[in-house]
Length: 157
Image (tube, rainbow, N blue to C red; front, side):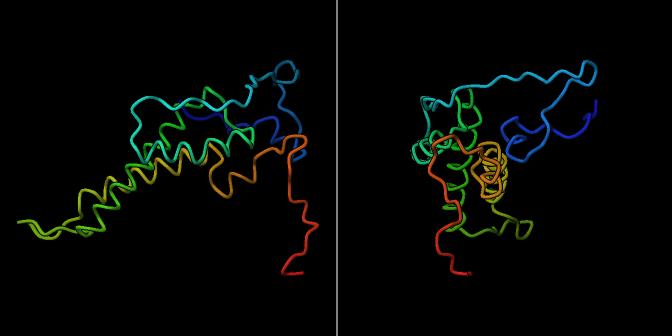
């Protein structure tokens, strides 16, 4: 079964962009959505050292931005675990090289495949969690938040 159009934007993003709220196509009523309070989830037991450090680095910032809820623990775990796998694979590649000589010739190091897959997983999860520069442009600004309104001196003015 294929997709039925673009993925809808969250209501807060629609408001910021000046886009009309989503409406039920048959009744014309505004679509109701679940809104969760911004609460930082607790890290799951058993995270590796690097994954736990990344969790501690990003979660406070996501909580301050108001874009993380307790239910997001799974995607956050995927992000930090992929981060750890990527860093571990990079260390192996740095030490042993990106290619290996085998009896059949030169091949990619198996750590390269781990690195590449972990990198893809990490970036996909990072987008969902507003951890990329482009994704952060979509973060709604909560009332009372400290923001840069562009009034400071700019080097290019």
